[in-house]
Amino acid sequence: MQENDLPLGIQYLLISLQIIALLIFLYFVWPLVKSEQWKAKFIENKTARSILIVFILIFIFVYGIGFVFDTLFPIQRLDQG
Image (cartoon, rainbow, N blue to C red; front, side, top):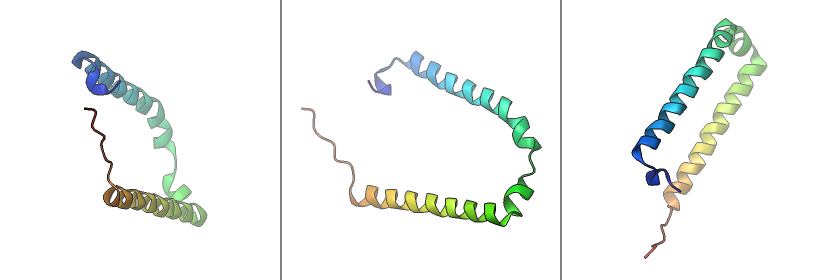
């Protein structure tokens, strides 16, 4: 079943549940995030900074590979006729 098959009211209900779950998650996590010393942990620490840079480079590489494959080999839809 695809989301287009659901009635409009249920679609809005699911979207609102996801937004409420996000707000509850942020409510519980925000004090922990706010109390951390992020600069000392990640920017001034050379090992952590190197790991972050490698993670960002891997993310860009994977995103680029996905973009190239989506461009060169687009999804072909089969007719259901």
